[in-house]
Amino acid sequence: MRPLAFAAGFALIGALAVPSLAFRQAENPAKMLANRTAGPPRECILRSQVDRTKLFNSGDVLFEMKSGPWYLNHPDPCPNLRSDRVLIERSPSSNICRGDTFEVHDRVAPTGYGRCAYSDFIPYTKTK
Image 1 (cartoon, rainbow, N blue to C red):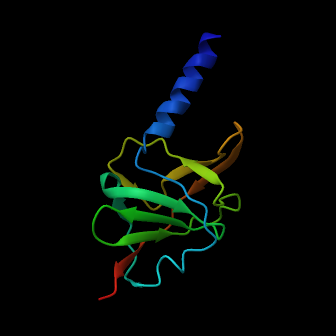
Image 2 (image 1 turned 45 degrees about the vertical axis):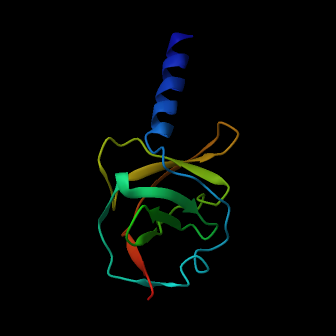
């Protein structure tokens, strides 16, 4: 019984490691990025600047930042990444970088759909 409680506690800590992530259902990021312009890819983004994260059925992850550009990431391959799922990261790092992994989980059931890795982060700045 004790190992199960420990495992559940660790999973909760992992889920809380990214407290600013809020997930909303959406089909594709094009509409949200319509008034923004893409820039050159970046290898990492600063975790503390992430305001919210959105998952899309296209398999994309959009990081809305507290200030500055938003970042689009397309983890590849990650076939089970959809808007009705959640990401769980277990990293003590202050950055989220290309190659960092996360787990894809169901929102309600304790079902995991595997691990995926982030690709480059494409910045999108507001068009003036």
